[in-house]
Amino acid sequence: MFPRSKACGDVLTPRAVRQLRDLAVEPDDLGWHRLGAVRLERGDRSLELPWPSHDGAATFAVVARRRELDVTMLDLAAAAGAEVRSGHDAVEPIVTRGFVRGAIVRSPGGALHDIPARYVLVADGANSPFGRSLGTFRTRRWPFAAAIRSYWPSPHTDDGALHLGLDLRDRAGAALPGYGWVAPVGDGTVNIGVGLLSTARDFKGTNVAHLLDGFVAQVADRWQIDPAGSTGVVRVGRVPMGGSVQPTAGPTFLVVGDAAGVASPFTGAGIDAAMETGRMAADVLHDALADAGPTALQRYPRLVADTYAEQYQLARLWGRVLGRPAAMTRVTAAAVRSRLVSETLLRIMSGALRRDEFGAPETVARLASTVLPLAPEA
Ligand SMILES: Cc1cc2nc3c(=O)[nH]c(=O)nc-3n(C[C@H](O)[C@H](O)[C@H](O)COP(=O)(O)OP(=O)(O)OC[C@H]3O[C@@H](n4cnc5c(N)ncnc54)[C@H](O)[C@@H]3O)c2cc1C
Picture 1 (tube, helix red, strand yellow):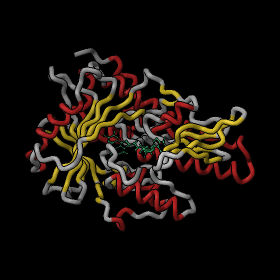
Picture 2 (cartoon, protein in one colour; picture 1 turned 90 degrees about the vertical axis):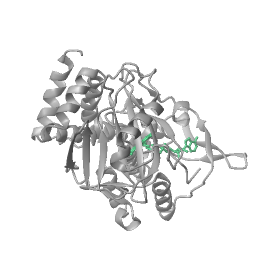
Picture 3 (cartoon, rainbow, N blue to C red; picture 1 turned 135 degrees about the horizontal axis):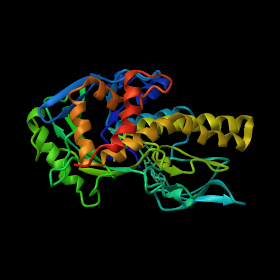
Picture 4 (cartoon, rainbow, N blue to C red; picture 1 turned 135 degrees about the vertical axis):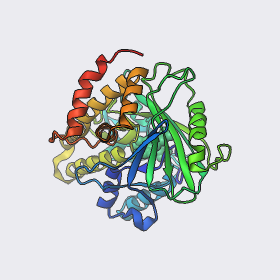
């Protein structure tokens, strides 16, 4: 149901901004707050750097509350001719002779009715019950993220940098594979949250709400916030990542966004990949409906793999290695000291490694991927 209160850091990465601009949406016109830089902070050290440039992406991110982003996207769809049915639940697929041919939908009043379709796009988010009923599954040994956020009033709401705290620790003081963020929203508040990778040693025993409390206390002075004065609901969510959900296509359906587990395996950010996969799926479906027929759908998994497989393989490896406190400590300490390391981290985080270039960050990322697994334990 829209508008909704979705657990989200509200940060649209430069890749997401590019997707918006390609849809003729200019974030500045909507008053969404620009973030021109990323500030990495660990202990009393911090380093600020611009977003890495990449492949036609914008050079800035924006912060947009999810209810605003969702409404903007729905309005665009409606303007392009889509019939938007708010509050309807897709309950189960209509299957005819083994092919998905639409969905049985529950209306807000509770009545069930059929919506027939030649092709079905599955976009039901992280848990994806509809996708599961079509046989999609998540590879359980690949990492996922748990994340939590809320809002606090802050006089620094117009700060122009996304603040990332790289010093998350468990109760025993060991470094955790995750980070805290402060995203200035530009509306009098800041969005503060914490994300933790499932590669953490004691992931199941770690309470992300406690991590958020600890992080908020850490940043309270700098952002002049009252830790007890959160204005939004505290929301938590899980994000499947790194292409961990398969298959992404069937004979008559495609799977996009979190339902396809395409969020970044390093950060859990997935609005950009949801928009990108939505666009790839739209292209493929356009061809299928025009004249190519259902075979066009089989192009989609290859498009997804070509776009993400290499970056995600690298980021998954890093995620696994950073589950070890010694490696996490070493990498984050280096990140706030060295521009090269921080730029490398940021390129991996934002999915901006340049595939065909061997610029310094790309070389460092590949070298470190082979060296880090060998780092001794703490
Ligand atoms: C705490 C937290 C912070 C995050 N911060 C960021 C961030 O700052 N930047 C970023 O890029 N990513 C962030 N993410 C990840 C991001 O939220 C997701 O990757 C992104 O929302 C995926 O978009 P989606 O459209 O695939 O899924 P969703 O945004 O989850 O949308 C799925 C939609 O499908 C609807 N739906 C589900 N089932 C049905 C059904 N049966 N019938 C009809 N509708 C259905 C849901 O109601 C929902 O509206 C964060 C995640 C969490 C948990």
